[in-house]
Image (cartoon, rainbow, N blue to C red; front, side, top):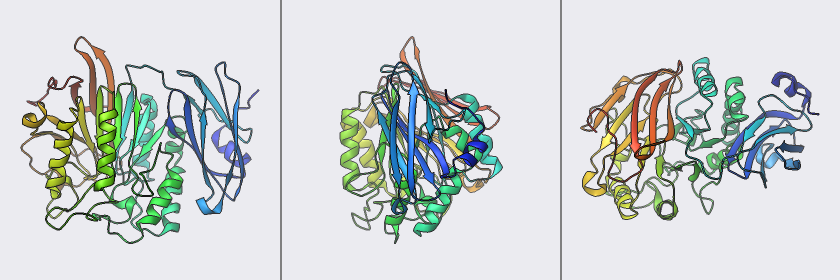
Length: 414
């Protein structure tokens, strides 16, 4: 029988455990679990549930990876509740439910710009209350502002140890990309010295399904129910290719990955997400947005057209202001491509980010807010419901998208 005790007592009994567990990629038959120990040691993670026999892994944490390790456990049963133990100890939040093989629903939360203060914790608590099925961190989560490896690791560690965050992610899978402050410096690009350190720390602390390709970038993707999320890296390759007139943003390697991934996707809905906003309506002087890379933006729209991508939506963050923008894409795509900007999880707003845009549908400076993407079946087929929500659970704005290419349910004139 598994002993269940409060998390604070678990951590005191597990003298070797310093931070975690954090749930990573969760599928119908597998899960990733991240932990960090105080010193290099061996950790045993055991999964129990359903009619399966117990699955156990003993892993070694090493100083080379800052005493972190990610357990990848497979062979699980779909739509099954599991609990897990770490070195024989268990906490009430150490559980998960595998994805169904075919599901019409999901409840994915997207957020950016968070810190370790109480305001951000109100958002983690709200997400916990809403029983989200996945959390997507869009960057500036945490704020680091250096590529020094020791500092990078320390900041990720402090972020992971916030009690409200730790409780949420012990049973909610987390998927992440970075923005400028966790990449290494405000408004920076891929020429930042020491970016390899930032990538190393990210790989140690974020249990994503994958981390770029060929030791470059951190882009990845995952699917829940009818939604496939493509997490883009808009920092690593930025301005490292092309020329001054047409600098790169995603880079050739990531563009090829994105095209392959979109062509292979069978999901009714495709969410393309990154920290950097996909539009050009930003505060004066801001140099990191897709609008500063117009040829790359055109390339994105052309790619969606060439791959006949339907049910698409954009999600971004960064600017400390939440907005919904309709992009003028009816000629190329046959529908208005909508972008939901969600920022911030913390409470620091930037009024200058409320810049005019011809496709602006909704704009609000709301501290401690996030985006929830939910799917359901309707008489018209699958429908995606995107809601901007605050820490009290109030819905600030809602937008609906149908899976069919040219049928977009529109609010406020979209």
